[in-house]
Image (cartoon, rainbow, N blue to C red):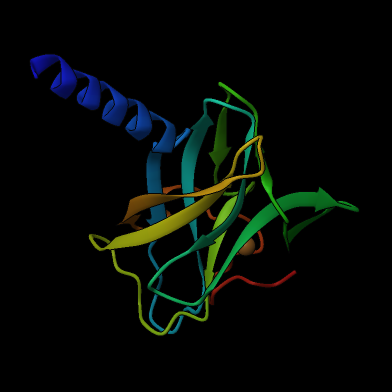
Length: 159
Ligand SMILES: [Cu+2]
């Protein structure tokens, strides 16, 4: 009888392991907004155990969440939505001001320092299977680090 139970536990833990996120999230944070600001960015470090990609994100804060990239284009810093952010196995990919970020738009309320923003990241694995990763991102002050070009104080969605 004891043996049977043990086998069951091993099977359960194996199942848990395969269902577990292949991606770890570190240092997630959201930039605080000023009153009337309609958009802000979420930043974090992502590390996948297998070649994966971040395909989308969502938040209860707003229905308008996109994955963006900020990059130089014709000598101008531009921001655009990307279909996915590649997460090569074992490599830390940083979503940071001036690069990839999760954009929260059409904000109905101010995002204040000390708040926590729940985010759900959708990660696609090498087999095309998608999984959700829940993240709780603390809100940091506006001046926590350099303001990226294109994200001005009014909400920064100028391209
Ligand atoms: Cu953006």
